[in-house]
Length: 219
Image (cartoon, rainbow, N blue to C red):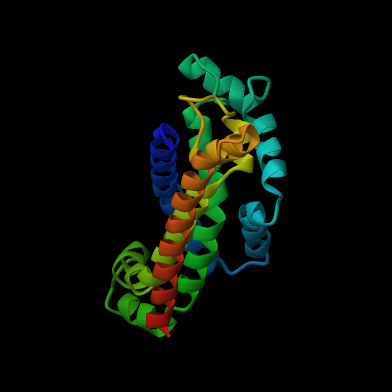
């Protein structure tokens, strides 16, 4: 693979998406874990729907929601003077939406598994709720949260369907590594397709090994 732009773009997009989905995902997971309401399950379904939606369908929804004719897309274009779709920012949005459900599900499970008696002891000594979360709940759930973030990173790095729908396939601008692999296969460029696939496969193996070790330690 002579042009490594798709790899570096994928890496940059996935890192930014992981940071955003990590912050949002942990916050949403904490609220869902502590929210005692039937609506919590419905909210979780909405946020984790991208896991089961076909990637192209997810991409279509994002495209229609963020395009220039949509409210969000129109506001973005009026504010920044450029459309959101078919840009690197659009790739970040697609990767973030794809990664977010993995962070939420893993983080919520980890937070729910924290012994409530430990949290209650912190409240008894006078800690406010936000400090209980910061010094007790989140540190105890850190391994599960980290596993979710790792899975989110792998999902963001390997996203194809949503990214190609929202960011497009513009070589040197918005072409991520999974899209470049698809392009190489279509054009008969076996070397590029093979190298890109090996890179993505290696990252997936490393992430899965990390997640497996994390959960093994938890057990």
